[in-house]
Amino acid sequence: MRTVYVNGDYVAEEDAKISIFDRGFLFADGVYEVTSVLDGKLIDFPGHAARLARSLRELEMPAPVTEEELLEIHRELVARNDITEGLVYLQVTRGAADRDFMFPDADTPPSLVLFTQAKPGLADAPAAKTGIKVISIPDRRWGRRDIKTVQLLYPSMGKMMAKAAGAQDAWMVEDGAVTEGTSNNAYIVKGNTIITRHLGEEILHGITRAAVLRMASEAQMQVEERSFTIEEAMAADEAFVTSASTFVMPVVEIDGAAIGTGAPGPVAARLREIYLDESRKVAI
Ligand code: PMP
Image (cartoon, rainbow, N blue to C red; front, side, top):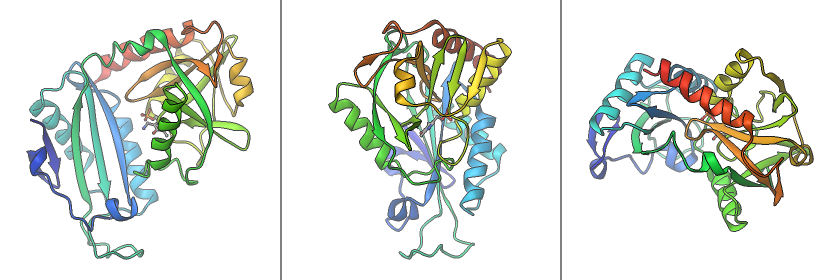
């Protein structure tokens, strides 16, 4: 039975309670983070904590605990649930208040919830060897995608559209350019160059993205941060996505068209290996 964290308490998941007036439930007025666990340790924790602080700031939401306390809660949950490989989900909302569009008084306590998911074999995922297929769909999300809010309905619909089309995920397109995957950042490789969309309000600033781009530069690979189209992706040598839950995942097909040889490419494979190796070394 899983132990979860709710507003200061570690409780069995069936005993965890959040108010029906919680603004996360009523207004999607909340933000979240997902941190992976390998060898029982947290991957890229400082990056996730920093992005959480930024998301909270952008929404004028108070931080429920300090970064040190947050780390302690993550570690405690990993230990209590005996997680060797898996994920820790964290959600902060503006708390519970009688239903009103206006934000409640500043002294309303935010809600903080964390739970784990055990994912044995996360680092050794079979999909990393075969690659995944994606479809393209219009990006119909709101305009501040740089804030990691819990408004995940459209990404959820995107995954369902992908499934219906026999694919595993969708790349979203706005004004002719790929923004990102439904729950990951998107990349193509042409020749020796790794291309991924520049940062802005149109995409989430992936913590895995930042680490992978830094490691790619350190390994003398060329990186270009700019927009690209689905047509350019179809003509690329390789494609891949990054996220905390999939690390570096090759993409082998877009809208039914094979990318490169139709098999995972060497750049994605190398980046996955480097990312996993380097991240394990500095995991906490
Ligand atoms: N973009 C979106 C829309 C996402 O949901 C995610 C994963 N939460 C990412 C990118 C990847 O971010 P990260 O590497 O921090 O997991």
